[in-house]
Image (tube, rainbow, N blue to C red; front, side):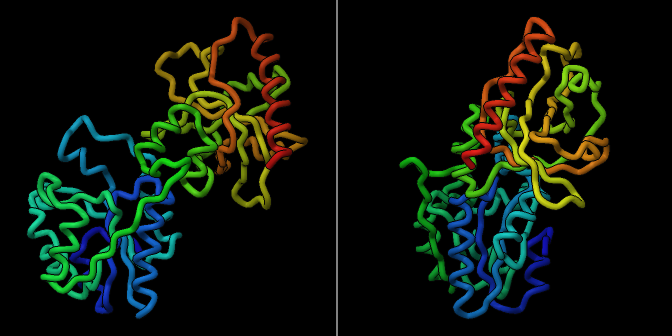
Length: 316
Protein backbone atom coordinates (compact mmCIF):
# COMPACT_ATOMS: atom_id res chain seq x y z
CA UNK A 1 0.00 0.00 0.00
CA UNK A 2 1.30 3.44 -0.94
CA UNK A 3 0.69 6.29 1.52
CA UNK A 4 1.39 10.02 1.23
CA UNK A 5 2.42 10.78 4.82
CA UNK A 6 3.92 9.33 7.98
CA UNK A 7 0.84 10.45 9.93
CA UNK A 8 -1.34 8.32 7.66
CA UNK A 9 0.83 5.31 8.44
CA UNK A 10 0.63 6.07 12.16
CA UNK A 11 -3.15 6.30 12.04
CA UNK A 12 -3.53 3.15 9.99
CA UNK A 13 -1.08 0.79 11.72
CA UNK A 14 -1.16 -0.26 15.38
CA UNK A 15 1.25 -3.16 15.02
CA UNK A 16 4.97 -2.50 15.64
CA UNK A 17 6.53 -0.87 12.56
CA UNK A 18 10.07 -1.19 11.19
CA UNK A 19 10.86 1.79 9.00
CA UNK A 20 13.44 1.59 6.20
CA UNK A 21 14.48 5.11 5.19
CA UNK A 22 16.17 6.24 1.99
CA UNK A 23 15.77 7.86 -1.41
CA UNK A 24 15.84 4.33 -2.88
CA UNK A 25 16.28 5.72 -6.41
CA UNK A 26 16.54 2.64 -8.61
CA UNK A 27 15.89 0.16 -5.77
CA UNK A 28 19.29 -1.40 -6.46
CA UNK A 29 21.06 -4.14 -4.52
CA UNK A 30 22.38 -1.66 -1.94
CA UNK A 31 18.84 -0.46 -1.27
CA UNK A 32 17.59 -4.03 -1.09
CA UNK A 33 20.11 -4.76 1.65
CA UNK A 34 18.39 -2.07 3.77
CA UNK A 35 14.92 -3.38 2.93
CA UNK A 36 15.92 -6.99 3.56
CA UNK A 37 17.37 -6.04 6.95
CA UNK A 38 14.10 -4.36 7.92
CA UNK A 39 12.10 -7.40 6.83
CA UNK A 40 14.46 -9.72 8.67
CA UNK A 41 14.06 -7.74 11.90
CA UNK A 42 10.29 -7.49 11.52
CA UNK A 43 9.88 -11.12 10.48
CA UNK A 44 10.97 -12.50 13.83
CA UNK A 45 7.95 -10.90 15.49
CA UNK A 46 5.72 -10.64 12.40
CA UNK A 47 5.84 -6.86 12.65
CA UNK A 48 5.06 -4.48 9.78
CA UNK A 49 7.63 -3.00 7.41
CA UNK A 50 7.37 0.42 5.75
CA UNK A 51 9.73 2.20 3.38
CA UNK A 52 9.96 5.98 3.78
CA UNK A 53 11.05 7.66 0.57
CA UNK A 54 10.42 10.78 -1.53
CA UNK A 55 8.90 11.40 -4.97
CA UNK A 56 11.61 13.97 -5.76
CA UNK A 57 15.22 14.08 -4.62
CA UNK A 58 15.64 16.10 -1.40
CA UNK A 59 18.35 18.09 -3.18
CA UNK A 60 15.62 19.66 -5.32
CA UNK A 61 14.41 21.43 -2.18
CA UNK A 62 17.81 21.93 -0.57
CA UNK A 63 19.88 22.81 -3.66
CA UNK A 64 17.46 23.74 -6.46
CA UNK A 65 18.89 23.12 -9.90
CA UNK A 66 21.62 20.82 -8.60
CA UNK A 67 19.53 17.74 -7.88
CA UNK A 68 20.56 14.51 -9.66
CA UNK A 69 18.24 13.15 -12.36
CA UNK A 70 15.97 10.37 -11.14
CA UNK A 71 16.60 6.80 -12.28
CA UNK A 72 13.01 5.79 -11.46
CA UNK A 73 9.79 7.77 -11.49
CA UNK A 74 7.73 7.61 -8.26
CA UNK A 75 5.14 5.03 -9.49
CA UNK A 76 7.88 2.67 -10.70
CA UNK A 77 9.77 3.08 -7.45
CA UNK A 78 6.67 2.38 -5.36
CA UNK A 79 5.99 -0.75 -7.41
CA UNK A 80 9.60 -1.92 -7.01
CA UNK A 81 9.60 -1.30 -3.25
CA UNK A 82 6.34 -3.19 -2.77
CA UNK A 83 7.78 -5.95 -4.95
CA UNK A 84 10.61 -6.31 -2.44
CA UNK A 85 8.05 -7.32 0.18
CA UNK A 86 7.44 -4.23 2.32
CA UNK A 87 3.90 -3.68 3.62
CA UNK A 88 3.80 0.09 3.07
CA UNK A 89 5.55 2.69 0.96
CA UNK A 90 5.35 6.20 2.39
CA UNK A 91 5.96 8.49 -0.58
CA UNK A 92 6.35 11.72 1.37
CA UNK A 93 7.21 14.99 -0.38
CA UNK A 94 10.42 16.46 1.03
CA UNK A 95 9.06 19.84 2.11
CA UNK A 96 10.34 22.76 4.17
CA UNK A 97 8.87 21.38 7.41
CA UNK A 98 10.86 18.17 7.08
CA UNK A 99 14.05 19.94 6.02
CA UNK A 100 13.90 22.04 9.21
CA UNK A 101 13.78 19.03 11.57
CA UNK A 102 17.16 18.89 13.34
CA UNK A 103 19.14 15.67 13.68
CA UNK A 104 18.50 15.79 17.45
CA UNK A 105 14.73 15.96 16.92
CA UNK A 106 14.53 13.55 13.96
CA UNK A 107 13.71 10.36 15.86
CA UNK A 108 11.18 12.14 18.08
CA UNK A 109 9.55 13.51 14.93
CA UNK A 110 9.21 9.99 13.50
CA UNK A 111 7.95 8.55 16.77
CA UNK A 112 5.32 11.28 17.05
CA UNK A 113 4.04 10.55 13.55
CA UNK A 114 4.15 6.75 13.99
CA UNK A 115 3.35 5.89 17.63
CA UNK A 116 3.89 2.15 17.00
CA UNK A 117 7.36 2.72 15.48
CA UNK A 118 9.66 0.02 16.82
CA UNK A 119 12.84 0.19 14.74
CA UNK A 120 14.61 1.95 11.90
CA UNK A 121 16.87 0.53 9.18
CA UNK A 122 19.21 2.66 7.06
CA UNK A 123 22.33 2.31 4.94
CA UNK A 124 25.77 3.03 6.33
CA UNK A 125 26.02 6.31 4.36
CA UNK A 126 22.64 7.61 5.55
CA UNK A 127 22.50 11.29 6.59
CA UNK A 128 19.53 13.11 8.01
CA UNK A 129 18.30 16.18 9.84
CA UNK A 130 18.77 19.85 9.09
CA UNK A 131 21.99 20.40 7.10
CA UNK A 132 22.43 16.59 7.04
CA UNK A 133 24.31 16.70 10.34
CA UNK A 134 23.05 13.31 11.52
CA UNK A 135 24.55 10.01 10.38
CA UNK A 136 24.09 6.30 11.09
CA UNK A 137 26.29 6.34 14.20
CA UNK A 138 24.42 9.34 15.60
CA UNK A 139 21.14 7.54 14.89
CA UNK A 140 22.29 4.50 16.89
CA UNK A 141 23.34 6.69 19.78
CA UNK A 142 20.02 8.57 19.93
CA UNK A 143 17.85 5.54 19.23
CA UNK A 144 18.23 4.08 22.70
CA UNK A 145 17.11 7.38 24.26
CA UNK A 146 13.70 7.21 22.57
CA UNK A 147 13.23 3.44 22.75
CA UNK A 148 13.95 2.64 19.10
CA UNK A 149 16.12 -0.13 17.71
CA UNK A 150 18.47 1.15 15.00
CA UNK A 151 19.92 -1.25 12.42
CA UNK A 152 22.44 -0.26 9.76
CA UNK A 153 22.93 -2.28 6.57
CA UNK A 154 26.45 -2.61 5.18
CA UNK A 155 27.11 -1.35 1.67
CA UNK A 156 27.03 -3.78 -1.25
CA UNK A 157 29.97 -3.96 -3.67
CA UNK A 158 30.15 -4.63 -7.39
CA UNK A 159 33.60 -4.87 -9.00
CA UNK A 160 35.06 -3.97 -5.58
CA UNK A 161 33.28 -0.59 -5.55
CA UNK A 162 30.14 0.40 -3.60
CA UNK A 163 26.84 0.22 -5.45
CA UNK A 164 25.10 3.60 -5.40
CA UNK A 165 22.49 5.49 -7.38
CA UNK A 166 25.10 8.02 -8.51
CA UNK A 167 27.33 5.23 -9.82
CA UNK A 168 24.38 3.73 -11.69
CA UNK A 169 23.60 7.10 -13.28
CA UNK A 170 27.20 7.44 -14.45
CA UNK A 171 27.30 3.89 -15.83
CA UNK A 172 23.94 4.31 -17.53
CA UNK A 173 25.15 7.46 -19.31
CA UNK A 174 28.27 5.60 -20.50
CA UNK A 175 26.31 2.69 -21.96
CA UNK A 176 27.66 0.27 -19.36
CA UNK A 177 24.32 -1.51 -19.27
CA UNK A 178 25.68 -4.89 -18.18
CA UNK A 179 27.25 -3.26 -15.11
CA UNK A 180 24.03 -1.32 -14.46
CA UNK A 181 22.05 -4.56 -14.54
CA UNK A 182 24.43 -6.24 -12.09
CA UNK A 183 24.10 -3.31 -9.68
CA UNK A 184 20.31 -3.39 -9.99
CA UNK A 185 20.12 -7.15 -9.63
CA UNK A 186 17.66 -7.10 -12.56
CA UNK A 187 17.66 -5.71 -16.12
CA UNK A 188 17.12 -2.00 -16.73
CA UNK A 189 13.55 -1.79 -17.96
CA UNK A 190 11.72 0.56 -20.28
CA UNK A 191 7.91 0.47 -20.32
CA UNK A 192 6.02 2.52 -22.86
CA UNK A 193 3.46 2.65 -25.60
CA UNK A 194 4.19 1.92 -29.24
CA UNK A 195 3.77 5.14 -31.23
CA UNK A 196 3.44 5.82 -34.94
CA UNK A 197 6.66 6.34 -36.86
CA UNK A 198 7.54 7.37 -40.39
CA UNK A 199 7.63 3.69 -41.55
CA UNK A 200 11.18 4.23 -42.87
CA UNK A 201 12.41 0.98 -41.33
CA UNK A 202 10.03 -1.06 -43.46
CA UNK A 203 11.26 0.58 -46.66
CA UNK A 204 14.85 -0.50 -45.93
CA UNK A 205 13.96 -4.00 -44.77
CA UNK A 206 14.05 -3.50 -41.00
CA UNK A 207 10.57 -2.74 -39.64
CA UNK A 208 10.67 -1.14 -36.21
CA UNK A 209 8.27 -0.33 -33.44
CA UNK A 210 8.81 3.04 -31.82
CA UNK A 211 8.62 3.93 -28.14
CA UNK A 212 9.13 7.45 -26.77
CA UNK A 213 11.21 7.30 -23.61
CA UNK A 214 12.38 10.48 -21.89
CA UNK A 215 13.41 9.60 -18.32
CA UNK A 216 15.41 12.03 -16.18
CA UNK A 217 18.48 9.77 -16.06
CA UNK A 218 18.79 8.60 -19.66
CA UNK A 219 20.63 5.59 -21.02
CA UNK A 220 23.44 6.36 -23.45
CA UNK A 221 22.21 6.98 -26.98
CA UNK A 222 23.06 3.96 -29.06
CA UNK A 223 22.17 0.43 -30.11
CA UNK A 224 21.20 -2.26 -27.59
CA UNK A 225 20.26 -5.89 -27.49
CA UNK A 226 16.86 -5.93 -25.81
CA UNK A 227 14.30 -8.42 -24.60
CA UNK A 228 10.78 -7.30 -25.51
CA UNK A 229 7.50 -8.44 -24.01
CA UNK A 230 4.00 -7.24 -24.70
CA UNK A 231 0.74 -6.88 -22.86
CA UNK A 232 -1.60 -9.83 -23.54
CA UNK A 233 1.20 -11.83 -25.18
CA UNK A 234 3.03 -14.74 -23.59
CA UNK A 235 6.81 -14.98 -23.59
CA UNK A 236 9.32 -12.47 -24.91
CA UNK A 237 11.32 -11.73 -28.04
CA UNK A 238 14.87 -10.50 -28.49
CA UNK A 239 15.38 -7.40 -30.55
CA UNK A 240 17.94 -4.85 -31.63
CA UNK A 241 17.02 -1.31 -30.56
CA UNK A 242 18.41 2.13 -31.26
CA UNK A 243 17.81 4.74 -28.57
CA UNK A 244 18.44 8.33 -29.44
CA UNK A 245 17.68 11.25 -31.71
CA UNK A 246 17.96 9.48 -35.12
CA UNK A 247 20.45 12.01 -36.58
CA UNK A 248 20.54 10.38 -40.03
CA UNK A 249 16.84 10.88 -40.72
CA UNK A 250 15.48 13.29 -38.09
CA UNK A 251 15.52 16.95 -39.13
CA UNK A 252 13.82 18.31 -36.00
CA UNK A 253 16.65 19.23 -33.62
CA UNK A 254 14.24 19.40 -30.65
CA UNK A 255 12.81 15.91 -31.18
CA UNK A 256 12.48 13.65 -28.15
CA UNK A 257 14.66 10.55 -27.93
CA UNK A 258 13.02 7.40 -29.19
CA UNK A 259 13.53 3.66 -29.02
CA UNK A 260 13.33 2.06 -32.47
CA UNK A 261 13.07 -1.69 -31.94
CA UNK A 262 13.53 -4.33 -34.63
CA UNK A 263 12.46 -7.76 -33.37
CA UNK A 264 14.73 -10.68 -34.18
CA UNK A 265 13.36 -13.76 -35.91
CA UNK A 266 10.03 -13.89 -37.67
CA UNK A 267 8.19 -12.06 -34.89
CA UNK A 268 4.51 -11.23 -34.75
CA UNK A 269 3.92 -8.12 -36.78
CA UNK A 270 0.66 -7.23 -35.01
CA UNK A 271 2.77 -6.06 -32.04
CA UNK A 272 4.10 -3.20 -34.20
CA UNK A 273 0.70 -1.52 -34.04
CA UNK A 274 0.44 1.83 -32.28
CA UNK A 275 -1.01 1.74 -28.79
CA UNK A 276 0.46 -1.61 -27.78
CA UNK A 277 2.17 -1.54 -24.39
CA UNK A 278 5.74 -2.83 -24.54
CA UNK A 279 8.34 -3.67 -21.92
CA UNK A 280 11.99 -3.62 -22.94
CA UNK A 281 14.82 -5.09 -20.88
CA UNK A 282 18.16 -3.60 -21.97
CA UNK A 283 20.68 -6.45 -21.99
CA UNK A 284 23.81 -5.37 -23.88
CA UNK A 285 25.21 -2.20 -25.44
CA UNK A 286 26.34 -2.72 -29.04
CA UNK A 287 27.53 0.71 -30.21
CA UNK A 288 26.92 4.47 -29.78
CA UNK A 289 24.39 6.25 -31.98
CA UNK A 290 25.93 7.97 -35.01
CA UNK A 291 24.93 9.91 -38.10
CA UNK A 292 25.40 8.16 -41.44
CA UNK A 293 26.02 9.78 -44.80
CA UNK A 294 23.24 7.89 -46.55
CA UNK A 295 20.33 5.50 -46.02
CA UNK A 296 22.40 2.76 -47.65
CA UNK A 297 25.14 3.21 -45.07
CA UNK A 298 22.51 3.16 -42.30
CA UNK A 299 20.95 0.01 -43.75
CA UNK A 300 24.34 -1.72 -43.90
CA UNK A 301 25.10 -0.82 -40.28
CA UNK A 302 21.68 -2.03 -39.08
CA UNK A 303 22.35 -5.37 -40.77
CA UNK A 304 25.64 -5.63 -38.87
CA UNK A 305 23.93 -4.61 -35.62
CA UNK A 306 21.32 -7.30 -36.15
CA UNK A 307 23.97 -9.98 -36.64
CA UNK A 308 25.78 -8.89 -33.50
CA UNK A 309 22.53 -8.82 -31.52
CA UNK A 310 21.67 -12.34 -32.70
CA UNK A 311 25.10 -13.57 -31.64
CA UNK A 312 24.80 -11.90 -28.24
CA UNK A 313 21.33 -13.36 -27.71
CA UNK A 314 22.63 -16.91 -28.15
CA UNK A 315 25.00 -16.41 -25.19
CA UNK A 316 22.25 -15.48 -22.77
